[in-house]
Image (cartoon, rainbow, N blue to C red; front, side, top):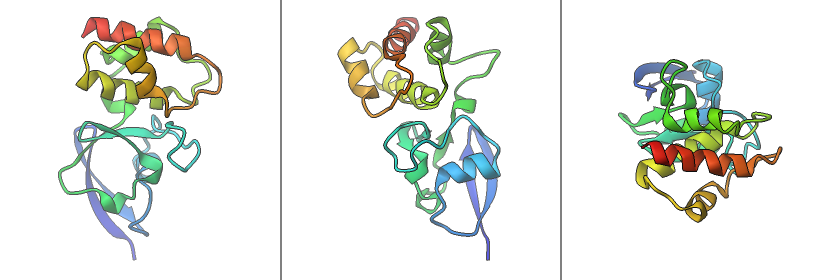
Length: 156
């Protein structure tokens, strides 16, 4: 029997029906709520393409059971970070630096970078690289990604 779960996603109260309480948050976000920022990459929490923020912390949604979320926790996806009309500084910088190429890693890189900049407004290049080390990029835009995060940090 399906269990109903209430979530706060991108500032909206939403409800999803779970057949299994261990259903990964990623599946709820994509399949039930129609959000496509977080992506399925490895399914093991190793690539970062599924990264979302839970209460400001970058987490891998593919290995986060929906049942592990506590009432009132705030989930933020790429769609809630900014909008086409008012992009988040990291989103704007990624566009300006042309840091997105194939799109595989872009959600994770942006969400991880935004989490970093929320805690450290002026990270060094080393700190940026360290924060992004767990995000895999297949097409090799690493230099542009680091430049984009640096650019975003200069506008905060």
